[in-house]
Length: 219
Image 1 (cartoon, rainbow, N blue to C red):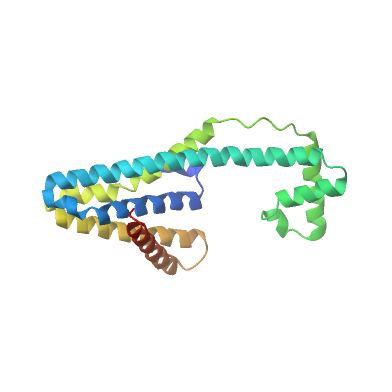
Image 2 (image 1 turned 90 degrees about the horizontal axis):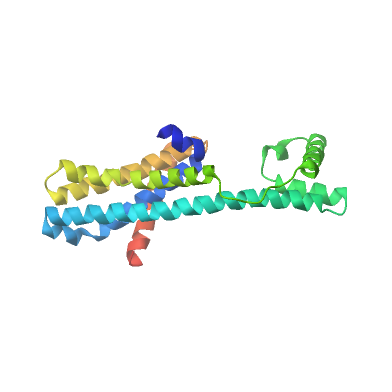
């Protein structure tokens, strides 16, 4: 499962999905404490609400991933068509430069960078962009998004399965989720080459603020 998710989502996407899932779960658990007045029955309703909310969000987020992947391929195809339709070489090279902005190519010396732009232009002139269609990889990437968001609800479920007192289970569940917000930020710091502890604390604080905003707005 871990290899499957890594095959289709980069670290930023993976951590983003987990963060969104945790925020959704916290929003549910912090706003439905009244349900626990019914004891175990209320706890069961809380779990159903949390799981249902994350499944729904996972489906939406997976759909957004699919659309984003298709739009990215369309952007590349449009860049190729723009190069083919450029009135002169200078215009075509400007299109290539804009398309490659933010990539490692921009770190090359000027002469090397211009040589690479010319090579990319030649490849674009020979390429035949295919129509943008839904691909198997798009669906698998969307499924990976859904999987991560749904798995974020596990910390909510476990305390209620292991602890009989629903109020204590809720407190333990929320504490686990806050810790996971920190862990998510810590991992982000590792991939972003910055302070892991600071990133963890910021993620935890921002996550709790976002949950507070969601609650204040009736979420």
